[in-house]
Structures are given as structure tokens and as C-alpha cells.
Image (cartoon, rainbow, N blue to C red; front, side, top):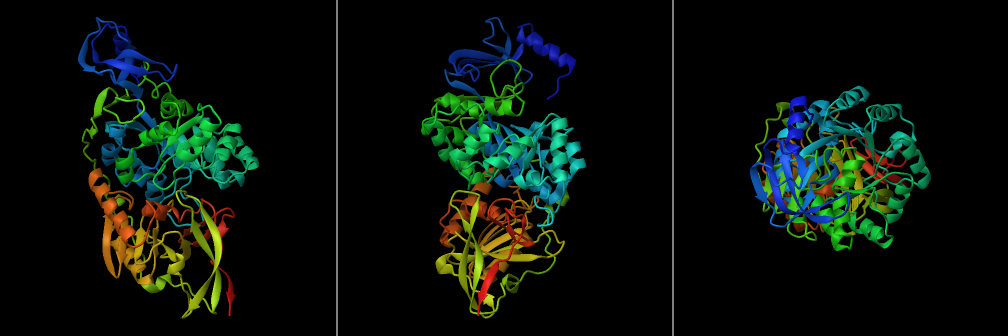
Length: 588
């Protein structure tokens, strides 16, 4: 991204028409994100950057592209996402996102960092300049997320954080959950100060905060929040100077609720942006990427130019990158999307740095790079997993238990309490009431812990599901109607060195191998999409009704999202930041 003096001079000469430019994109209708105008225009591109707006007729170019009167908008920006949760390598991800116009990803690589530390993170972003989209790094701030309450494979401390701020790709300190600031934890405050000294922003994770707590959070230099669910929360954040990244992922869908409030209250969009956070590949292929956030906002009544500005210039400004991306103006990278219809976000042509990366929905293929061998050996069970590891032992007739109750389309959950029978010395889940066992199995070969809890909301009628993707520790998580199928699913995950599994009656009925850090496939995007669709269909055949059951399964164990989480240590009271008992009371 850096200039040297000679290339800088050449760009200046190109801007003045004194040397041949690489490309002139002509006959377009330019969407100006600075003036909100739409006007006829052409763009001259040299050395990957726009160097002239409406170049003179005597400009010489190696190539000319006729825009056929289409709308030209800046490449779309995802302000917060985890590549690993797409289940794809960055190379394979290109196939899914470039046809939808995404040219910049702001990546919090906390998933691979929790599995394999700084080395894993470095391997993920290595050679990212050869990709057909840009990667900007949000340094993972919490690796591990809940020290003392979970087992992870890697750590990133203050010293590693300071080193990562030296990288040219780094734009921010990644999402920091409230407890780290509200409880004045030194390590995380040092990381915030290192970001401040490096003149980078800090990404927030302000889930569940009161207006009073938001004062502390904002004072702590936390610059945004992507966990906003209601319009009231959005307004409270904006009032203390915390912009909102409006999220639409696979299981967390916030665009409809928030955009409705924005339109009803005529709220300015200047401090609003879009992100996906966590979105599976099959949902990207079917719906779109950031394009989907834009499209849905327009369909709800938001002005198309305002929606596009949220996906471009507002994001660039927030991260202090407006000199590089976010607009179609001289000096910026030539990341351009051509749309036949401004109200239907289906790109006909996508350019990154003046090079075509997708045309008519067909991406330019990208060869996968070589990843280090250690990333393919991260799932190591300390001992064999048998069905008796999932027993919840108890004495008496029945027990009052804490149950994790899922909330549809949201990452948050509720704690409910319910009486369950005790049969043969163990708690007996109630399939007919949709109260099932949920378990986390430590997968780094460090201690072999297995913890078991109860969950309501999966609607499984038989069998079990399992995943080696379980935020943020990424131990193996499984939910099931019986201990035997749960054990089989976990053993299959270990055999595959990571992945998703659905099984029933002692048989594996669908699976997806994720051998790269136990998080990502090494297959092309379309193959992963098909296997993911097969898995979701298998889950539905077992009774599951939710759209993205494996995404929900991957989040249910989070120790930082209210109200309950589950790690290999046990059941977590998220707001209290401590272990809590599954069984509250026993009746003899």
C-alpha cells in the first residue's frame, strides 16, 4: 500500500495526462458519496488507483471499458468479520464475496488466534495482497476471551499486540467485551493504550450495557459496537459517541430492526456502517454479503445512496482510511462496483485496484496458498470420549436446573430454570419439552475436560450435532438427544481434525471437514456450500427448525454473551464472569 517516490511521481503525471494510464472506465453514472449526486462520468486508473475524474479526451489508456451507463459505486466494506466463520480460507472466500461487490474486509482473526496464537494469525493474513479483496487487520484483543474460564490453544498478550500494531494492514484493536474495561483489567487497558498510542481505534462489543456503563465504555476509547439489537440501544450508543456497525450474519440478524428505527426517526446515517460478523458460505452465496445489508435497507425504505454510503465512505472514515478506500475519487484505490440498477444490488462488474475480480457474477479464480502443517493438527483429544462422559449425576427425584434458552435470530440467550426428573442417578433431559444436553469437550489435548449443561431451542427430536467451531475457545461443542450419539459425533470431529457432524442412531448422516485449525475447509467455496446445505438438511431431518443450526451451536458456548455460556470449565454466568451451578436445588 505504501508509495515510493518514483511511483508517486508517475501517478501525478498520469493524473495530469502526461503518461498513459492503465484503464479508463467510461460511460458510467457515478454515485458520489461526498455530495450524494449521481452524474455521468468516467474514471482514469493508474497503478491501482483512480488518478483522474472525467479525464480529458486526449488521455491515452492501455485499456478502455464501457460502463454502459451503469451506476459506479465504491467497493463495499465489511467493517467487522471473522474469516474463519465463513468456513473458508481467504482464497476460497473470494469466490463467494467478490461477485457481491465486497472489496475490503476488516478482519478480527480471533478464531485462529485462539486456536494457534500469533503464528496462526500470521499464516492467515500472509500474502493477502494477492487476494482479489483487501484485508485490514483488527488485532484480536481477547485471546483467550475468558482467562481462567476456558482452555484455548493460543494466547496474544500485550507484547504481541504491540508488535501487530506495526503491521501495515492493522487498522484497529479488535472487539473488546465490556468486562475487560468495566472491571479495569490491566492487560486489556494496556492493549487499549497501545492502540491509542499507535493512533488506531478500538472496536467494541458493548452487548447488554446500560447507559451508565456506556459512559465508562466510551471513556475507555471503545469506538464502536456491532452487538446492537434494538433502536434504543443504537440511540444510546450514538449519544455517547459510539458508532454502530449494523450486523447481518447467519444467526444474528439486526438490519431489519435497526433500519426500521432509523427510517422512522429520520436518524442521520453518518455514524452507521454495515458488517457481517459471522456468516456461513451458503448464506453468502444465497443472499449476498454486505450487498445484502444494503439491499435489505433499501427494500425497507432507506435511500439507496445513504445505504451505499454506510457500506463505503462511512466505514472508511470511521477507520481513518478515507484516503485509501470508500469513494471513487482521485488518489483512492480503484475498488469499483458497477450496478445496472441502484435499487437491486447485483454487481455486473467488480474491480479491485483497477483489475477485474468478478464479471456477471463469475469471480476470477484464486489459487490457494500453502498453509503450515501445524495448522492441520489442532484437534487432539486427551482421552477417548464415551457416552458416560455426558452424564449429569444427581440424587433424588427431580432437580431444579439452569437451562440456556436460545433467542431466535440472536446471539444472546436467556437463563431459565426448570424442574427435570432424575432417573438412575442422573438428570434426564426432556426431548418433548425441547430441553437437551449440551456439552463442551476440550480439544487441545491439555486437560481432557468435558462439561455438560442443558439447552432449549434446538428442537432436535433424535440424534446429535457437533462442531469444532465454538466461539471463542473453539473446543468441541455438541448437542443431542442421547449420550451415545453425542459421543459418536465428538469422536468423528476428532477423526476429521475438525468440522461439523450430524449423526443419529449410531450413524454419521452428514459432515463437513474443517481441518485447517479445526475452523476452515480447504475445499472451493461451492463445495463447502453444498456440504453445508447437506448438513443443514440433515439437521432438519432430525427436527431442527432454525435456519443456521451450526452457527447457533458455535455461539452457544460463548463465555462473554449473556446470559449463560458453556466452556470446558463448566457453565458460565456471563454477567457475573464466573462459574455457576447447573443444579440449583434437588427434591428427594
